[in-house]
Image (cartoon, rainbow, N blue to C red; front, side, top):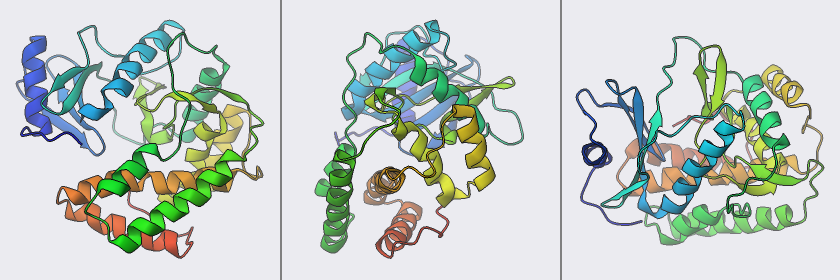
Length: 292
């Protein structure tokens, strides 16, 4: 990761100054893999990501502009020069979609959006092939937040899953995938939903976009919600032999952010990282994980 002397919020403030935006009442909305801030007087949100993600973020901006023109309900970037590279951060500006009180969009909304996405032609954008665990393995190799034993276990488990992934069939075929599709990446826009967070878009097996919702049983997703998701998409992965491979890949993938946060001194992330590792090592699929 590129070293930086700025906090994500200060980087957001500097980006807004470059864009000529007022920053009065800049409000943090989320701080996880990406930090998100609301500009209430501009009806926009600022996303602050790592500078080493600039290529992916530029691709996400270009792709969402194209998908919006094709009629897919995506979160849309605003018409400013972006991303900005500021002292180790890549910063983008997006339309704000105010979220009402009450439940977020259910999995069925994601199912409908993915059905529309997977029906679109391959976009004229240079998208990478989907490669699981590239970012995870990089952080596992470089971090000081893991014991040698935990590092070896994660890499060994990753090797097993990547080998299994390489031998999967794909009944749904390969094409444009979101790459990080799960109900938490949908936002209300009135009574409809939009699909957000396109940094991991790629060309890959479409089952990848469906499997993450099934992995959500670790966060309380119910059989009824999984059925609603599958009905909305028009395909059910439940009995597909490759599903445990994809959910296993996703389980490990989620460790990456917690490893980075632990290395930066986040004690809550360290506790969750330890808990997730312990459940994975004993092959426990019933323990509930925290969402952040």
